[in-house]
Image (cartoon, rainbow, N blue to C red; front, side, top):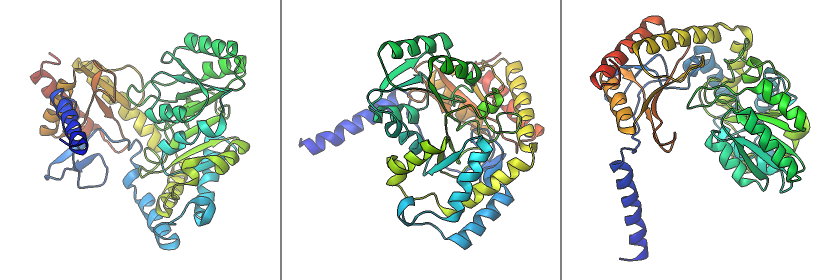
Amino acid sequence: MSSTEAFYASIRAELDAIRDAGLYKRERIIATPQGARIRTADGRDVINLCANNYLGLSSHPSVIDAAHDALRTHGYGLSSVRFICGTQDLHKTLEQRLARFLGTEDTILYGSAFDANGGLFETLLGPDDAVISDELNHASIIDGIRLSKARRYRYKHNDLEDLRAQLRQADADGVRYKLVFTDGVFSMDGTVARLDAMRALCDEFGALLGIDECHATGFMGARGRGTHEARGVFGKIDIITGTLGKALGGASGGFTSGRREVIDLLRQRSRPYLFSNTVAPAIVGGSIAVLDILEGSTELRDKLAQNTAFFRAGIAQLGFDIKPGDHPIVPIMVYDADKAQKLADRLLELGVYVVGFFFPVVPKGQARIRVQMSAVHDTATLQAALDAFAQAGRELGLIR
């Protein structure tokens, strides 16, 4: 066997091992826009409980109309990066609007939130500096930190005493600048970072504080400004990264927001910004319309909170083990990867679209169904989903 043939054989063997372990991920095909209900490619009409469409804006008529308008007036794409000929007036408008919404001085757009985190740390921090990161931070944060030459410290999840210990250790190691970075909301658990206490701790140790707001911007806090608003530290966060691909319209694109000089340096040195195409005009136009909606009313945010409370109470009453909290991410713990996939498959047969999560997306032994609420769900739809969970859970022996 040649070395090339051996390479492909090793890939096939690895895929077989993933299948044998019950960890193989299969893509389900849908044939409609995101909504409270969707249609799968095989024609089934199902309740959608696993999209990041928190506010239901991914198919909102005003957002679609704004995207069409931008497509007509500004074209399909820029075919370039920002500093060559890829910056339009729309991009500058969206960046200014996001900064105002988030309570910062300036914002820079990226092709994705993964790129925003990927281009952050190596641009701002050097080998004499330190990043102190929550152990459950998103993969994009982990990868972004790996790209930097900064020293790396990890603290136990949401554990302020361990964070204090890591800050002390960084000082003992003689680092120059310290950046504490955390998810504002952790995507697999729905837990919310304790930003008020973290801000106080960072001030005590002279550290910067940065947050990834992908699962918060648009609906966390009284006005939907994010986790920092919900925790009472609006305007007091040094760096915010986030996405346009979840609550803010659900298309694609990411951003970093913060002090003006930080954003200016990212424009000069951040590699994903300098070497990736500009966010498409239609997405930018639609995102501006999203901010118009959010700044005009809290109706969608309030409806999402009501739906979350209703479903969380219902699923707990059925006897499922869920992660506590009040976030629209509702992790229903199954613990076994095979059982999680069987539960998801049975629920699909019963008309509910969910997905099982298991290693490497979550730690081994922590398999789950991650349910996500949306403002477009109504009570009857959520009750029908709860009835399906009750039937499937009893059939699989997960509840009595």
